[in-house]
Image (cartoon, rainbow, N blue to C red; front, top):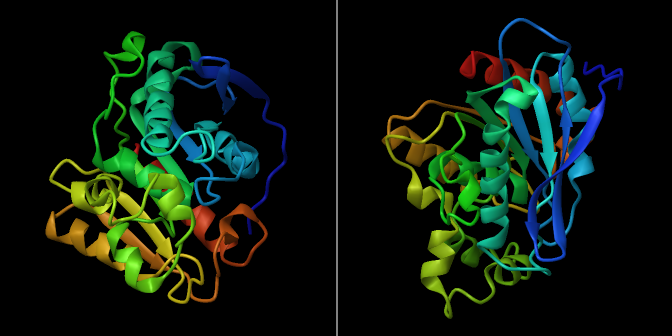
Length: 269
């Protein structure tokens, strides 16, 4: 069972300013302790064109209670700016956290990411890629790659979505064009094609009968991690449906969240 007492104090910061647009993250800190704390960044789903960072507020509170510095970040949705805007924002959020590590007593070398669906796609990208664009020169000395990833039914290979017919509207909107129009961009947005010997350890979950994102997306990603000899754990969640993790009381959440927390603690120890 997952218990949350909601006693952690939340602070909101602007981590990136783009013209008149302020991108914010909510930060939850653990009780004072000796030494630096590990950190985790939560990224919400919503087909890249919806969702809110507050969907992971309760999870961030739980992780803070467990000793993590936890943050939930907003990023530009596809209706505001298409790919690679969301990835650039999320990489910027990681770099911002590292730049302020001393302020928050977090260890910049023990930073993980947790995301679901579109957020699962984005955290997978954070685990397989270095900074795509040095969009914030003040952060140029800080890496955007995380040390561990929890990826709940994320999207990993955009071209492979085509035969399934899944995400047939949200994927082209996110990628600002069809596969026929922009095949290289569809591949560039796919974390599967970036798996290599430096890829961060991954904790993967997916319902074999997921109605929104094909299960094959995570099977193929796990296979790529195996071929690259990268550490991963794959926890199928049969019957969970899609988006279950936002409800901490869901039967699968009560299994996945504690296990993912323990896994991140072990990987970031």
